[in-house]
Length: 145
Image (cartoon, rainbow, N blue to C red; front, side, top):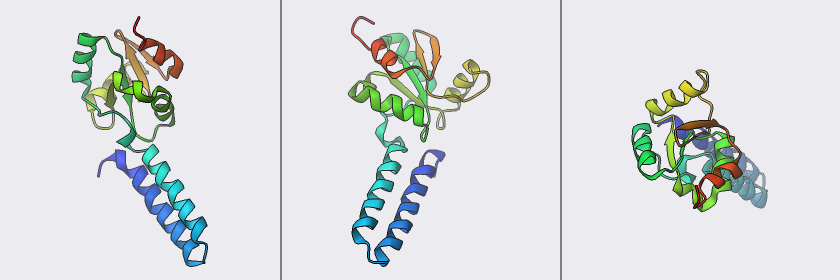
């Protein structure tokens, strides 16, 4: 199991245990609702809601060819989740690099963030921006950009 799945797995297990306790005490509705909440949190913190990640080298190559921004991210990051949710379907227009799966991506993020793996780090036209405002990122995807 990779690091990307540890938090979602723990959420599912915790939710199952907590809801089982409620259900065995006769609170079927509360147990079911609690389990659904934990499942939604697990999905939100998993790699499932992000577009398919590629390696940093491939992202740089594609970005140079098509001019699209690169987003360095990691599962479980609330700021990455905020960016992803605010972009909606437009998120597919960016190149996503999971720094937990790509050591070169993690190194690229550390290089521009004083040695820290601060995400999301968005690279637009070769310039890095750490945790930019989601509306600014949407502007970078406009047809005129």
